[in-house]
Image 1 (cartoon, helix red, strand yellow):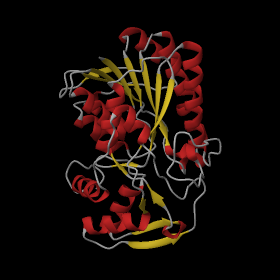
Image 2 (cartoon, one colour; image 1 turned 90 degrees about the vertical axis):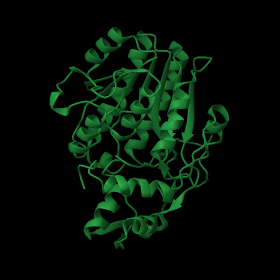
Image 3 (cartoon, helix red, strand yellow; image 1 turned 135 degrees about the vertical axis):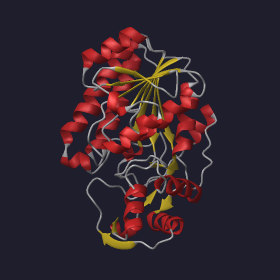
Image 4 (cartoon, one colour; image 1 turned 45 degrees about the vertical axis):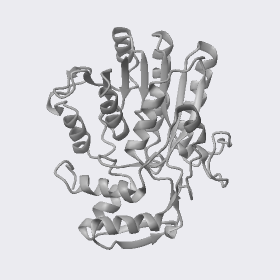
Length: 337
């Protein structure tokens, strides 16, 4: 199959493209390589994929030296003309849309970035899928759409009309847009609500990376809501396994399906920190702070629907996943240690 994977300089997109290449798919990866976080990590992911960052220019195709079936193009989702030319040229069977402006707290500081990437960019993806006969669009949503829901575990049937951050609102808007395009234009789409993904090559703005860096350097870590938070931490390999199962099973009818994709075993934040301390071999210096705007108290995925339809079953425990993350963090593969 010929598959477009967006966000391949990012965390989940990087791993998804690599996994899809293992089964001889023809993959084109695109990414804007923005400066939301340290570009050295994005460059390192690209280099690990066989793409030399020094050769990258906007709208220029680079073929991987590691994976014969992989080509990378630096491209902005907001550039509708360039995106349309790419779709017209390549005739993709499937689009796996994992690019987005991420981060809850950053959305308070820089809302324009979320409007442009997550709304305008997603609309451009939908338009291209509509006009160039893409068989299946898989796109990233988020557990943040559940907002401050107190009922757990979160089910796809729960209300999602009360987001508490702009990021969450854009992700819910993506789901609604995909639903409209499925009804009006017969597009087959599947939205995956990700729950706190972590692992090697992970984002440096997320807790596992931030805490590990601080603990390793003897610096203090910020613990919000005095540690009374829990997250459904999900290891990257389990997430990618679920994505690939969806990619390999196209819907029989044009529709917009929504699935939770997580571990279904939420972990208290203090327990998570203790696991990090053991893996690193150093205690953390803790600074306890109040709840931050846009945060939620807990995330907890009911993944029974994804398990029933696709056989999804995460297998990586938090202790095992953290050990693998720390091994990578302390290795020479990590450009930010």
